[in-house]
Image (spheres, one colour):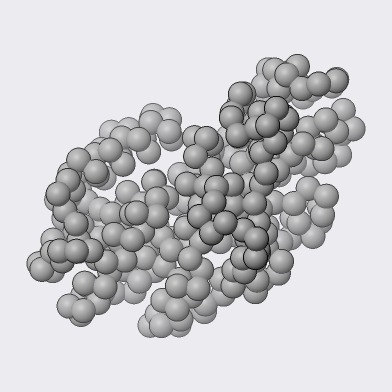
Length: 301
């Protein structure tokens, strides 16, 4: 088998969120103590891996907010509510957790009731809703922005037989206006490959172009599911453009990160060799001679 020279390169997922999603960073002059602590920690960890940074930010947020339940007990202080909103938005930017989106929603509604919600708050909450595939809710928020931002997220339809809260869900974009919820099926004892990619990531498209055109990589192509990680803004055009050009190797938007818990890294491209619902190998970057060789050796000839 022919391999390219080894170049271990990935597009950091958190940079992807910064570059292509709605920013979680509010105006600096209004930041509060809780938000500031998380930003300072993030700066300290800027040279760490994405996985370590996520774990540190999320665990510190959980520690700092122990005993606070804003959905059952509103804060009642505008400045503290705003600070907690910003801290929660910053954490959800990393965690992509539905529980953090729910908390953000309660804080947003409190700010709205107090007349303190700005377009930034609305865009930030809408972006969080997008990460957990609540597109209709995000559309309703975005439609009322003073900036006049159009609500262009597709309407999601569910497969009738789909378990609503089941794992392994993804969104299949049918066009710019609709997306269907589907599920990936892990098969016990069967080896399959999941690749985390993004249409705006040059490393991803280079990898997929090689995989799609190189007959030596047919073994990989025939087992491959392409997943785009959750992002505060849906890269719908990029996904559709890719899928129209490569109908046999389509990209699907991960429904939520929680649906794919065994996949611990979202940098692009990252390849996971799955045996049933277990990860047995993973490698990042493209080209990656060592990673490809290890994965190929694990697969039946």
